[in-house]
Image (cartoon, rainbow, N blue to C red; front, side, top):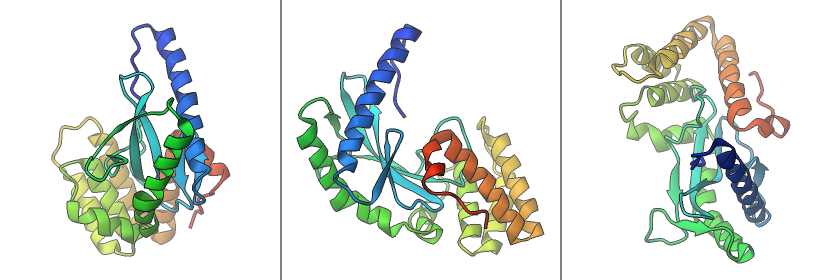
Length: 235
């Protein structure tokens, strides 16, 4: 999620390392003021995640020491890609009348972390608490549709299967195979959809096992410390 500046590779790496250290320290300060989160890398993750990771993260901007704040919502059952999906996430601000706002985390960290924690507690965490199940994820995002993105179509299909609507989920998985797109990720997404359809035909057990494989791949790639805090059951 952090944006690199790198003209010189070594300098870019060093700067990224410094900025990551600062953002992690700031996230830790915020987390100390909130009882319901775990610090995973430089993200604050709402506990427990179940199938849906909800949390707070920072995105570095081109302006020194300034970051955007992100309300992240990531279904662990989404297709495992190099970059973490932000299809269901959004930037937020400390003010009611602004959709996004840059904050300078190097100026009065104690006061600023308190303001961020207050904003999370008042506006963001209640929404995380409501999204405690796949059904609640669907209630929020299914009406919005797949936005013409094949990976979102797969996410919603899986969510229906996990939420107890296997028939609808199966129909949506079949539509993923016929999804018209030239996206470079389409072959991988179609392959996963085909594999899940095959698992679904064999029964709930094989389907749940296939989902566990996908979720563990996403955990290891994007939230590696999560495995030491919240294990994902195979059923």
